[in-house]
Length: 216
Image 1 (cartoon, rainbow, N blue to C red):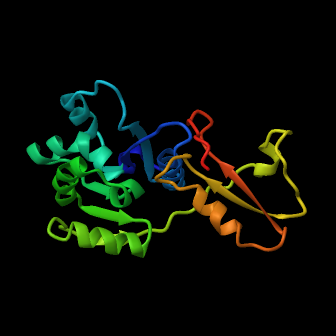
Image 2: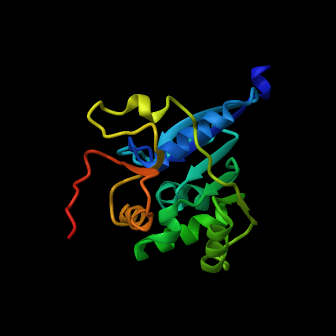
């Protein structure tokens, strides 16, 4: 493929190791790179001391900007897309916290960046309906629904510590995510408590560095 025909995509996302956003971002990048016509570079929205002029210069090198997390990416992009013309199209992906645990102080940023997007994406029809109800006065394009997927790798049973109680004879349900209130890992436990047999086992996979408080 002639490099002249290659499309360059900048993927802006929260990339904290072990986070769901990082997993989603890397899965998106991996999927886009399957095309021989697309190159993808990832940039963390948490990059320290990034200057707007420096980010603007970087953005101009790309054919499109794909931003995961409307608030955290929008915090960097709002001033650029409001004050500069002739920029690559922005595709904005709503993250779970944009919709389900949005802080009041986030709203001005989200309401400013949403109208600048040439494409908007939600991971489910339910999320789309919710986003349309909240931001209906700021939408300048339809919201597309693209369900999330998973990236298959080494079976988890082969990567668990030897001390992990794991039975290959039982069906395993894996709950993965940050162990914090907004993710509500206890929801999975409550569901499992209604099962009357021992056919299933539950593995909760989360960040080992998160402080866990024992609940009564």
